[in-house]
Length: 86
Image (cartoon, rainbow, N blue to C red):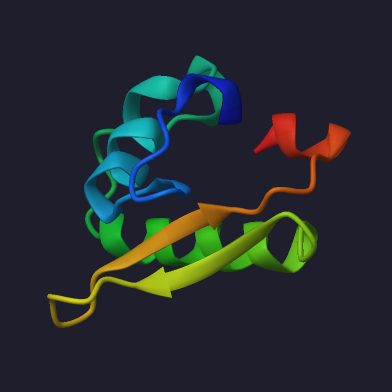
């Protein structure tokens, strides 16, 4: 996944909308968010918190400079083989 993301502002990251799109369309069908989910934002929050917990050396969260609660997930420079499962 990290290889598919173009660096912006010298960082590799996914915005909040890109995370939700990835959870709906970018992963294997059995892991995708179902269309019947009522609160996709809560699912996104749970997923990114778990990602940070599992990959503390490779992933961090950052709040956008403009926006109320917009969060983006940033991939750090250190490469990790486990990161590909995210």
